[in-house]
Image (cartoon, rainbow, N blue to C red; front, side):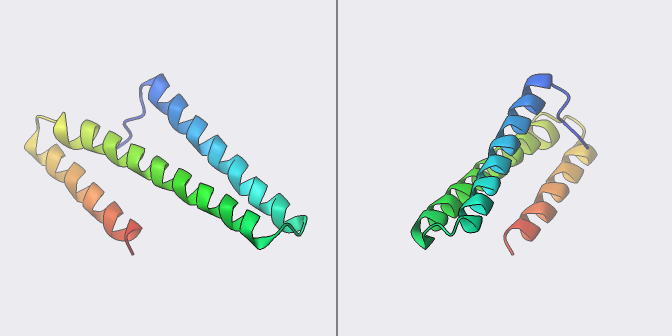
Length: 92
């Protein structure tokens, strides 16, 4: 069940993902260049924050498009089950 039909929603998510990709590449370059551990840890912390932000945005979007704004009880139940399953995996 995709809800990224709005071009601005998809564009915003892709921008976040591209920034995240750039941050991962920065970690790779730092390791290749034998940069100090503290600097690399700082980069890793930035990635962790970016992933958390992306996750929160996706959860909020799912809640809006598949639970809150859905009139059909069965579709709302499926949306809630999908979110519950994803959160169980995420929180392991």
